[in-house]
Image (cartoon, rainbow, N blue to C red; front, side, top):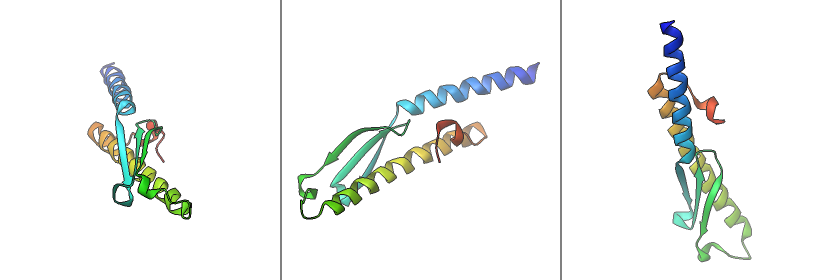
Length: 100
């Protein structure tokens, strides 16, 4: 019975950590700060900022690449945080948060 109680407490702690992480915001920057994206812990984009200098109608591909790079960086930041949270609990919790 003690083991069951301990498992329930661990499950509650993991749920609380997941809820906390979902509310956090994670930033990704590319192009020396020309593009910045902000994702929440659910991997949803909540903000994007693009320096007007990055908007060149003759080079849309560069802007697209900068947005993708910034988004990847923000995603990596979320996954690092999730991995750290899992390590604190002594287990891998990345699959609980939908991380790849």
